[in-house]
Image (cartoon, rainbow, N blue to C red):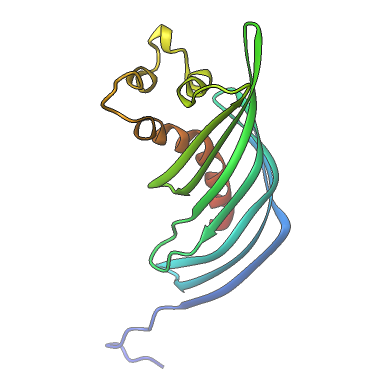
Length: 181
């Protein structure tokens, strides 16, 4: 029995969650099947997650376009905070007059330090691939893409935030919600 003046120590977590191909996300915007081997440690107030979640198959709709996930892992290795490291790739078809492009987007790193890669088949420069996905530079509707024409800014700096939102957010948000539950 604790006395009135003493505080109870915080509850320590040590919980392992195995979800072999059974972690499913099904809603209007995403259909993702993944597996996870995660360990929750720390305290109830400050949990830490270690382990890996892997997307075995999936698709999501983002800004009206359907993406097929071709690769997806989230590694939880940070001992201080919940900060997954992503390695995610998805592809989509983009039709323009006279041509159809298979566009592959990939991103690796943390949300603060994502390294995006844009590729297309038939090949286009990354700026033009971004233009296909994010808007028409010629119409001046997308400030980020217009800024790509400025020589003092790099493509990496300008498209990093957009790629993070476009590729990682739909997947990580859904998996993050499932992990929290």
